[in-house]
Image 1 (cartoon, rainbow, N blue to C red):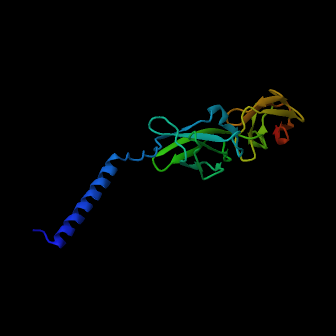
Image 2: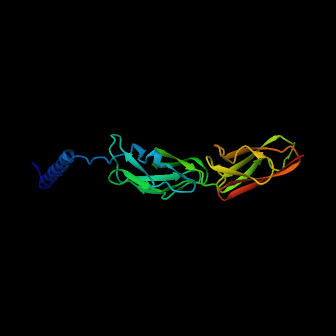
Length: 231
């Protein structure tokens, strides 16, 4: 025969079991919250044709990327970190993707002509590199390379060579250099184009008598003077 105390203990145990069973049933019937999308890839959405600009200037319209999950769906609210190389400048160190998984920044090239790059990354495992082309700026200076202060024979030919560079020292190609003969000799042309290395060349043919030759090379406001003699 159960005592009063035993009856109470039994009832409390039944209540506890009922509550525990109910909570367990609820937890089994409640669906788990869906996992947040995970960034699986990041792609550039800037046309390659737009990734060209002079050195030390920005890409027109900036650059943009899109973050996608493993199914190719855009992922919003993701932090994208930006790193510029070769002296370039990213306008932001980090940005956040919008509802379309996209984000953008302004990108300025460094002062060295050639290929330039910008890295966009999500965490430490997902990243992409955007590669652009930095073009040399306008000609700022002509530098003598060969043919100045030479003593030449009579009736011989010699090459005069200059290099066209921008304000940062980058070679400027496809620029027209005018050659002006200020006395004596014959030049092979009145103008020549700079090559891929920024070099422009003209040939001077000396007179059949001792003479001094003054030749000016000019490109825009930049100029340099060659002085040679024949004996």
